[in-house]
Image (cartoon, rainbow, N blue to C red; front, side, top):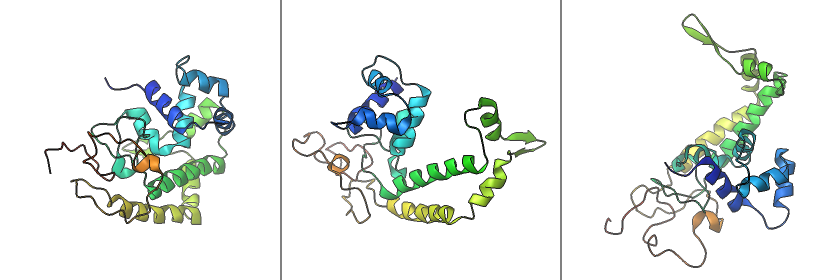
Length: 219
């Protein structure tokens, strides 16, 4: 067994936490009380599904790792810098992947609004997002019609353009330790590239672009 979702939620909160007003801001953004977030961070309560969903929407780049415990870094699914990851080791953010996640979440919310779904009603919400098998195929709810309407908007077209840029960005990662030049629009946040100051001598032979762990005796 690897780390738990509880462990990973705490790592995200520790990494993203700000010195002043973090908990209040988190409450404002998520609608979940600052007290409950503090309790989760201090292991005085387990993170709820509501908390996990809120963090996934706030930090979609961490969502896959938070739930699964592994990264998919070439697709922008990374872990925070304070988390030890394996079998991948790449932490570098991908700008266009982050944009793609954010825009996709916005469009998903727009579909619910367009369809007039009462998200507080469990039965209505569940039925709206359920596909029903009819003979050999699956039929969606009335949301399908609204989905096609949204797919003709400029915002949806922008999402497809972002996907093209994201595909190009994915090529600029180092699978084989070749120290590729950083030509794409990656984040230059020191947290995502390298830790300032003391450097772990066990990892200094690797570049920030490398996806995999590479023992020192391997070229």
